[in-house]
Image 1 (cartoon, rainbow, N blue to C red):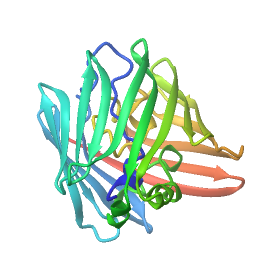
Image 2: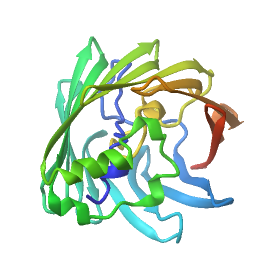
Image 3: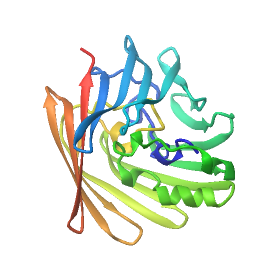
Image 4: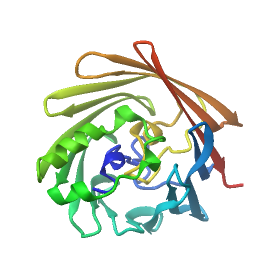
Length: 283
């Protein structure tokens, strides 16, 4: 299942905190390119195209070869997202309940439903999302795109092991639920319930600068923390179902109030992993 490993990062661009319609993304600083540090080199990961204030297309690149993996084209009703069409035939459809998201459904190139996400709210803010993930024996032959693996936050997506377990079932449905808590306009806690196991991500500290992903409409390939929070996270703690903890610190370089470089350092029992992401913006 071509993108399920990284797509289940579940990247939702939800306008969860204001009275504006959800599905609207018109940032003051528009991302143009995203690069990552890969094998000690700065490598292009994504390139974004805009139609005035509206995001038109994102092109995704393989990190190992630099070749184009595929592109996503965005369709709107006015300035509100309705569909995302991938160049390889995969597509995403959005449903709304008034100003709020109702469902986001993701289909493969054969128009077979692969993911269905149902939203619940407390007032204007999302309180939980229930995801149904559909798998089949055929899906195991579909490709994963490693372009995303270096850019996603691992603890906010399904692991490769979980995906293989889904595929090994030979078809069926797996249900995962995300529960959210907020402190003002920033995500403070994310609890993931999966087959009786609970994983908790706590976001303890933010800076006061602009998160360029806030309200982002690409709901498949962006980790929650990048578009659910108005500001940029500085520190978080992740606890798995066995009680093991990972402390994650973020260091930013800014141009004004907009980040141009982000370094993420994760420490698990003294074992440290570091990743770096670079941003360029439309001038």
